[in-house]
Image (cartoon, rainbow, N blue to C red):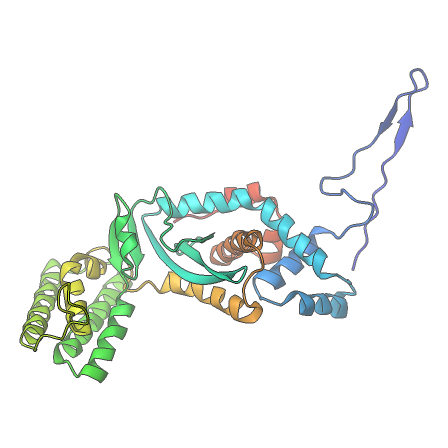
Amino acid sequence: MIVTEHRAHACCCAKCGTETRAAFPEGVTAPVQYGPRVAGIVVYLLHFQFLPEKRLAALMADLFGVHLVTATIAGMSRNCAARFQGFAAVVRDHVAAAAVKHMDETGFRIGGKTQWLHIASTIWLTFYRVSPKRGSLLDNVLGIVVHDHWKPYYTLKGVLHALCNAHHLRELQALVEIEKEDWARKMQRLLRRACHVTNLARERGVPLKPGLIALIERCYDGVLANGLAFHEAQPTLAKAKRRGRPPRRVGHNLLLRLSTRKQDVLRFLTNPSVPFTNNLAERDGRMMKLRQKISGGFRSEDGAKDFAVIRSVLSTARKQGWNMLRTLTSEPARLIADIRVA
């Protein structure tokens, strides 16, 4: 631990008696305080490595001889979030304007109630935000949105959609194993082969040939036709209620989705920038669930919002290849100028 002393000299004018005192460096506001590196290490361990506050205080004492109380740790977190509010807003705008972005949402416990952490990300940027409503969507979104077919995403105006085929493969696998539906096995094999040939084309830096795309689409239509014929031949399920349409089987619902959203399912074939899955957003959200398992959620909404801001900074820094400690101790304006968008 290095201690730096600052002295401000004062001078008194011999004629008028006015005293002039030198200014302290920016950020030095108290007689004794911790420096930016200590605060940066604390914020990194708290919000990126998810150490609980009491264990974090013990670690700082054992390794560095810095004795912190939990209130000081919370204050460092609040101050960091306040400094990086503008940075997070810039990341939000870049993600909204990106040609391809991934979106997902996950439940978040705040004050003993379930709220929602919304994730919007690209390969270079990550933006998190907290909302009490699951249906709260990001504003001013353009381009292509990759998601898992959650219906509110289809209310976004002026965007194209690409569906996560990892979700489709899992649903198809369940139909193969449990329901023994042959069309599901064929569709599963077709999507995997389409993913494979698309990856090969991207590695070579060439687009898929139109003839191959047309062949995949014909096979796709054929599998759907066989599956729909199979389900239409099945006996009607009994209604749970008197009113409304008869219920459909799980496989039948999946077939209708794959049919009506065909372009969104197969968009990765025609647009090389569109991935086969929404795994990017799911990876960005997976660590948030780990944070909840360790600490059980947040006591206040302000604490959750601070966490979302800081996590946006740290996740973006990791994708940009920046040094974490240098990021947390740098001026946000300098980081904004260095952001790589595409």
